[in-house]
Length: 110
Length: 115
Image 1 (cartoon, rainbow over the protein chains, first blue to last red):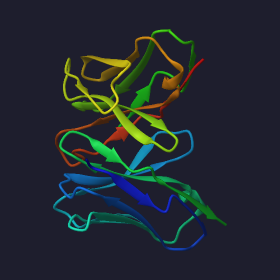
Image 2 (image 1 turned 90 degrees about the vertical axis):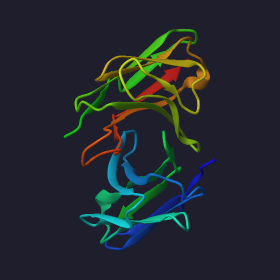
Image 3 (image 1 turned 135 degrees about the vertical axis):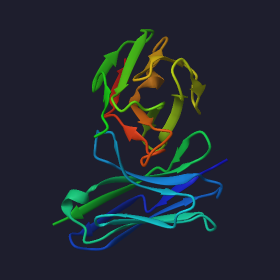
Image 4 (image 1 turned 120 degrees about the vertical axis):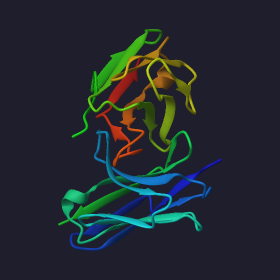
């Protein structure tokens, strides 16, 4: 059974720092891995999707990498800003559904 | 932009009531999903659908049913609401093809309280 774990569960950093959020999954037979952002009380916003054949994806200050063999993905946030404060979720896609991690709650303070 | 809308942001119902949660997407996506999100448990898949009139059980279908009569609309039904169904309900949709294939787009969520 696929399990997805995110470490750390919470993170508080000063503005300007570069951050790494970690996601690990137990079964390497995934189709893709997706990173989401969720603001309090809101739905999820898709940030990046990495297909199983890819190693990384970039969007602005965000970079996500995927290492299937080790069962890991990382989300790198460059030059963090207070507006980046949110919960970040990763999800590994099996043939028919996404398996979500429980998220990393990020706070960036000025 | 993809838009997924849900009929209510907040809903309060009584135990035993029949509850309908509606989800509509405007991007002609084939796939639609219903999740619930609870603290410490993350998102769990209730039901999903890959086509009109088609449905598949997710991880926690007990106490729920769904309906997909039109491609753009996916309804979640709580036949007899119970207090343990108090949760945040999230709808999502995705396409089977194209550049954004597989990317799931989520609605704003419905926070349901069952008293």
